[in-house]
Length: 477
Ligand SMILES: [Zn+2]
Image (tube, rainbow, N blue to C red; front, side, top):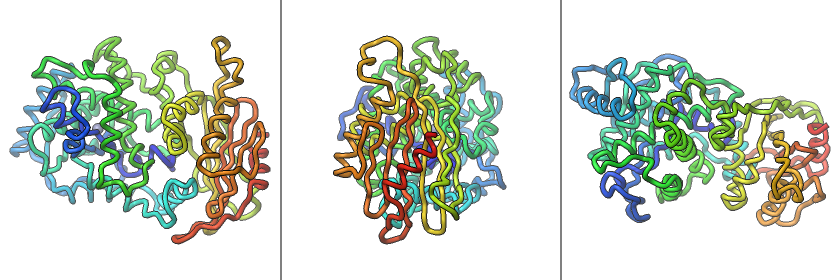
């Protein structure tokens, strides 16, 4: 199953939010004011850059035709996009306009067909267990709400067809189309279809692919919008998209959707465009093409381009076991978390800059989710990189020590007095959702949440910090 934060969007058929750089850029050609941004945010979200369904046709039944008015408009834009991107179009792309409800339904059907209901239920429960969603949280419903507000179209690798929301107009429609056509070119040259097949246990790798796909498509989309001003995406500060994403994530319409789902939705765009623009600054679009020949395998490589250039892969970590929980527990998920998912999780507890720093020592990880009846527990084991030999950080201890100190400070603010706190452990006995523990040994860090009994109204703890400490020792042995 996919991991709990970034990849829920994998679950939903690869629904990736394009932030609303759209109308705003097209109108002013420069950074829009916040208020303008908010208005311009009918952001394009597209599905289909990754995670094509494997089953029967998920696309709506309207038959794509190259002779339709929509397809002819797509063909004109494809020529332009192909020229800007420096990639030949190998075949035409049929285009179909759909009502928003049909678009959302198509993505939902795809997700529900591809993912077992139990897996979806457990993903939602882990969000509750970590305190990021309320008891009885309607995970699928929340995702649909996000999509309803944000979905503007998608490219379906399975039939090579573009589906666009019929209610978009002007620059917004053009930008969405340009973005999706980049996905079509990616598919034609680098086989998005096979790259986007659901691969259980490889969430971070899938997210890294999504970041490349979305960064590429979003960077070109901005070029497309700025072409008449003789500008490209490289003229804009890299922080701008992050700011736009933030204001988009705070739209009133989606305020009730848990914050981490909103930040997860935008992350592949924000992190992807920073990666792609860095490549473009070094070697133009040809450098981005080379990244497609050697796709980043971790989000660490996306967040730190030097690690991609150096070919630094993840450190191998064993999946956390759970014998200390006692008999009757079964493992319902075995996955990787990744640096980006850690950063997004820590952002729930501390300022963004701190969260990024705590996550940045990431070297590799493995997570597991455990269930016994209505009880659930979650474990992730991360191995930090060894501290750099030089530099002023050495007197502050290893990267994992620094991380634990920052985590402890932030969690005390969030949860009050810890039940357990020493140099290598910090643990909170949460009344409903049970213990939340971080433990460190050498360069290794373990986070444990639960066990607790899930309930649609009020959860109840079924473990304590004492049991969690013993569980952590089992994992860190
Ligand atoms: Zn996209």
